[in-house]
Image 1 (cartoon, rainbow, N blue to C red):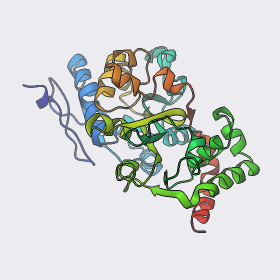
Image 2 (cartoon, rainbow, N blue to C red):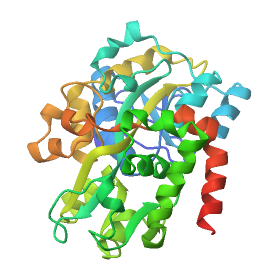
Image 3 (spheres, rainbow, N blue to C red):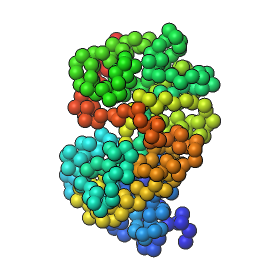
Image 4 (tube, helix red, strand yellow):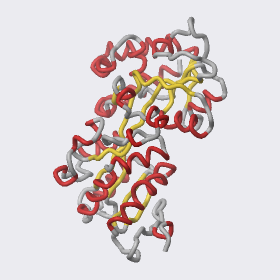
Length: 349
């Protein structure tokens, strides 16, 4: 039997199993990812090697995120999900609401192996880090701009690209206005700070081209619509690696978020889930993942295993992470609704 024959992926509720020696069982270890290229890369970097080494069968599913499915699983007492990949906002709220089991870090190993330290939390074991970065086409603009330059349309004429969302744009506006990354959320928690961010956005509003997941930053930048844009670091790295683009990245003042694995409340497979979490925290495994999908590895030693060009583009390379700002999920949980309403009103006028 070949290794490919050992793996079957469950997508959107169609259940198959991964096992080297056993037939499909009713309750294999259920791992629920986010689908797409990242989950495909995780199969090669994480799941196949784990089953080959441990003979523990896995069933794989994907989901589209959101707190409602997690709450439903908990309220219904359904324990058919064991490990689930969550974004930072889902992890924060899910842990607070008791949707996840607290991780036994004494069994999982030293939390100090994670970088940044925030990748290891009470309920989450980090799996990847991504950034919102300032990006430009090096074929058209040879120097390295800053957020201040992003706003300087007199010196650098041209349109600017921003995602159509209050989140990250308010933080970026304050950094462009001289607020140090470490002070951004302190300032943004005040009414004056919010007003200051919107006044800063006012300055470039006529020059903005808005991008969305349906019309992403790479499409806007590649079409030559903008001189500078924000973009997620993964799409930029893939454009350079696969499409032969020459996009530059400014890491200073970038905003990062961490994707994590969480253990569903009451899982009967906690012991096997912990073994998989430990396996996925191996630097070799994380480097293998990052070499396929250019996310930032979140354990020490993984970046050093990447080819130099890939390591240089890694969000968790110390030089790239040093002046980045972690998105404050507690801030957006508490203030997101009213700030998005204000942002929508601002857009409309």
